[in-house]
Image (cartoon, rainbow, N blue to C red; front, top):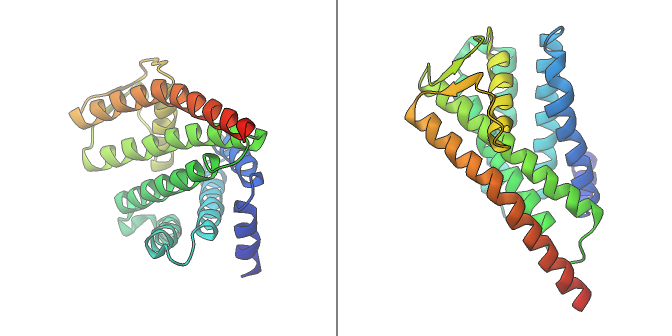
Length: 224
């Protein structure tokens, strides 16, 4: 209980945005290379990270937001059930729960970044965290599409496990978000192609809209 209260106080300040950005950097850029040698350990680290992030998001929701509390708590439960019992057939449901939970967390961070007040370094870091969270969201969308329609993506080297598939689609998500497109992963299903187009557009439009909004908020704060 005290931990939740501490997390709630942390989320009431801009410091939480810096913590979240650092955690996302570890998840996206540090943990994936570990899969090459210690896949089991890396998968466990990913599970622990998502649990901590969702607990933080849970602490940021008020008691009146019952739906958000249920979504985040359900996502945490599904993650660990699927981790300890991968043969239970919860794969698609786990991906869907994670997608919804990360989307909710992204909305919470956006609210924190764009609330009234001067633009600080922590808020800029929070805006970068939102950009990274968008990549995580689309990775979940691609994984969900791949679970519903097997063969929706063509890989130059087929993933050998679910964790490798998740890592490959996360890589593809950020490559698409930044419109780099190396061609080693190709969307084949119409739903996958539509999602890739939408993510590429988001990757171009979000930074422009974000910068314009932050500049406007800073000018308004200075005017006051």
